Length: 120
Image 1 (cartoon, helix red, strand yellow):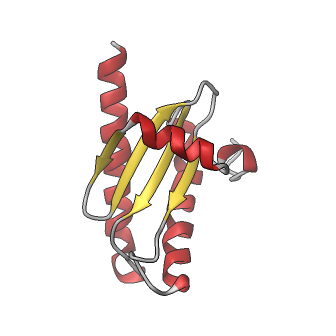
Image 2 (tube, rainbow, N blue to C red):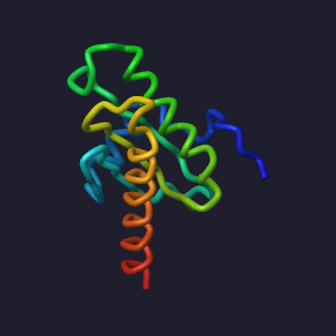
């Protein structure tokens, strides 16, 4: 099993982000808002949005992005052929990282259930 986070597993261009946002299939909770869109590939891709409104400090914004990327890297095989954009809503740090990761997992599970119900 390849758990690397390669360039092919990232959303890089503005058009890729825009296409995911335009579909508007989204779920949210206190920590994150997750958008999803089928990508026609056999693997999932991830885009991250952590704005300055979430945290003024770049160190904290980068910590949030690293945490989400790590979760995605470990769970990518189960995510299927979708493009995901994760937008952070509130900052978190080491003290409540576990809670944020559980919230992220719950959002991806909700999206998977919606995808399964819409395809059948």
